[in-house]
Length: 319
Image 1 (cartoon, helix red, strand yellow):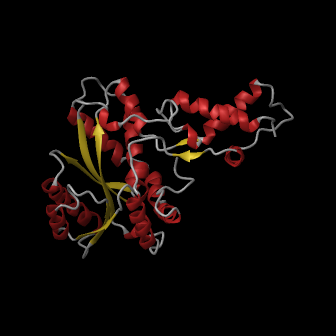
Image 2: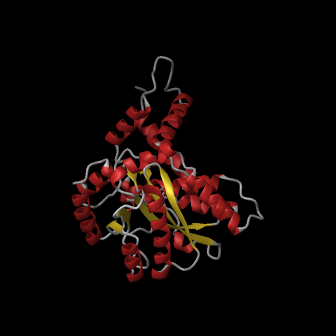
Image 3: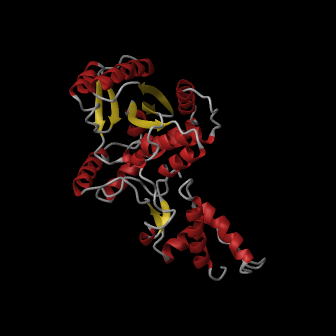
């Protein structure tokens, strides 16, 4: 084993994260590659000294330091009540077999606001909001590169669109643009469209099982509840602040946004053209990725229960 391996890897890791400035995620693979280069530069890695594997390096650094995949400092808040609700819900959901979350749930639905990022600065700010964790020590949370900007205070005046999407098994099956302000009436219109999609996908079943969050403006409004009853939709409701229990939240929204941000946007692109491009990206996500994402539900439920609701993401995820 090369001498000073851990200290070099820790130094390289911190440098990579701060240089990234939250525009992209620094992984153990990145740390491994950069550590190998730095060891060669320092003359600590020769033909007789074999570089350890990526997994081995990651385990060694975790054992010798407090570096873990920790969330960056951001706006999401947690309370003891939220943790209690997550713990209780995950305990109930654990009774379901793993394949239920793939075959038994007819659809997972969630809302997201997409900002039309056309300039380089707008794209950079949006990328920073997508970072879910850093390979960091607890004390590094406030250092440059480890803190994401507050999304609510950015890109004021830039057009944005609220989308309701539904995912099942290995693809996005529902895509709905909320053209009006999100409310009970708008949710009722959305549920009518969702019901039509569910019947087209599964046939005229007695009821449809849908996982959704506890949004009170639309999902839990009186008009929303009435619309779900009319469409024979029975819901399993997420506890507050539980992105790890919604496949769209823990992987797919980020994947869609990343793919859209990576594309060249014509300066004269209209909002309608942007929405068409956004929808195309979502509907053409690789089936293997979507399937793997949904199959992770059971692991995330277990992680939520094991942590007594303090985390909703299982280690060793899709990143």
